[in-house]
Length: 164
Image 1: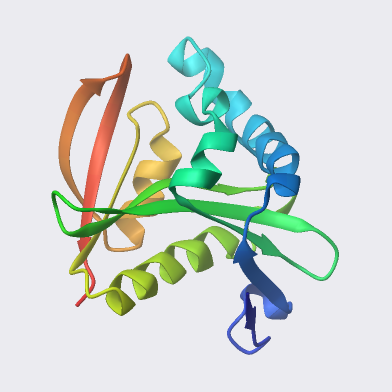
Image 2: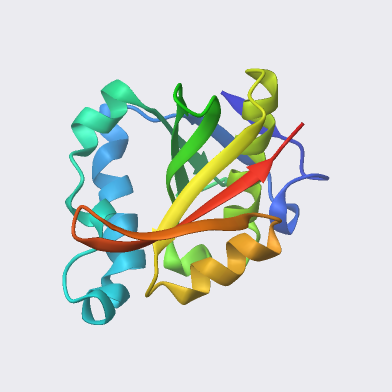
């Protein structure tokens, strides 16, 4: 568990980031449904995180939850990609009622720092081509687009960022 001092926390709120437990899965799923449901119409089906087996993800990936003083406000899921020697972010979600406070930025910056700690040179991630808000957000954070391709029935945009 990491306590983030208020001087470095988004919105000057004391935040705690810790490994998710099975008890957190319903909250993570609820945040994902709330944040991603607006994309169903654009994509034509539920985005991949909405149909993911989160019980399995907790067993095979790093799934962390971000809490403010009252509740879980976000989550990030990542794993070490041995093929590319990078940290791959599988999902970032912030509760829609808490968006715009820097929580997504903080979660991604945490993943970048984790990659450095693990001796990995880069962070990779992807989003759906129709989630154009995310494409702009990742570019603002210094990620470079590397590819666009159809994968698992989704049009995906891939990003890469050197971190050391």
